[in-house]
Length: 78
Length: 146
Picture 1 (spheres, each protein chain N blue to C red):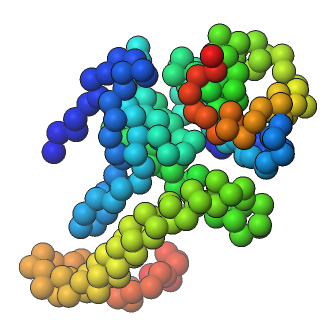
Picture 2: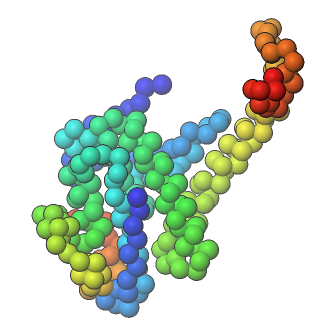
Picture 3: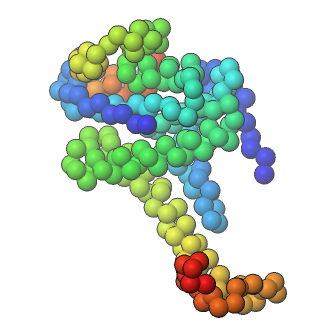
């Protein structure tokens, strides 16, 4: 399933981030979690806690604090 | 045909390649991608847009990836139609539409050709067809009326 979050980046550009939730496997693999972390611009080591505790508004605010270039990057957050 | 499996075992060292969808007569490029094996799963990640797939079986991962590309293209189409797509999404949609349209046309053509060929093949066929006596040659009839 695809989920899309559209935000106004910190440099004032509309940017959409699309993530997918894998429903064909019982447990997501590390690769899937890493991919999710990269797309949501969250450090890979923090993705578990973000998924457990973040509210939608928190995710929206987090993404809106990034520049367009950061949001479109697909590499891991350093 | 044997499927060539990715040999890389980390994302950093992933194999670069392309994912093609099989058409009736040739393959069609869907996405440039990277692939690697992580633990017990094969991972495919588009290097052009936000799609990835994983599975213990590489062929299944490919099938999931291709299905997701179509889902993604469909989502982008709706966003473009609604005027809600971002600049990047609209550009990705144009790119995907250029790749998918010839595949869809070829598949549709193949379907039409198959339909046209089918009655001919049936007439030429040496194998017989059994029909219950009293049942019309075509069309469905309730059991009580047969």
